Length: 144
Image 1 (cartoon, rainbow, N blue to C red):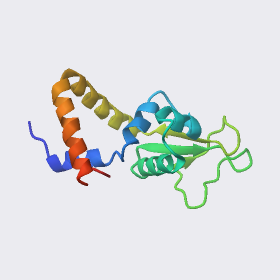
Image 2 (spheres, rainbow, N blue to C red; image 1 turned 60 degrees about the vertical axis):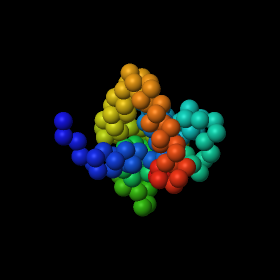
Image 3 (cartoon, one colour; image 1 turned 90 degrees about the vertical axis):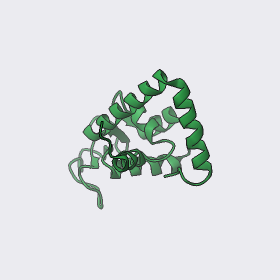
Image 4 (cartoon, one colour; image 1 turned 60 degrees about the horizontal axis):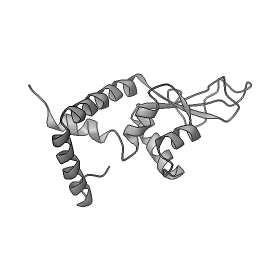
């Protein structure tokens, strides 16, 4: 098997922080409103941490933000936003923001599911990796 360790590390670092994987998992069943998504991830997740996480996922093309802004300007892009990152949702009240997975996000979620399956099949190895990751994070080597 040929694996490029640098590519793997870059991909894993592309899933930001503590809450990034949770966002993907919570969006698996479809789009969610921002408040609903934040609560589903964790009741301890503050808005600043939530917004930072979803913005980092959007920049990477993993999720998309959609906003319904009313019938008169439903087709107009918000100033400073790319259409691919900001598309109106017609079936929600004006100003309501939704997030959903992109095709890239769904493929990354499949990768996370494979990693989760490996962890369940190899609980001792996974526990050892979690301990190692915690030690490196405490030393300043594991954060994103």
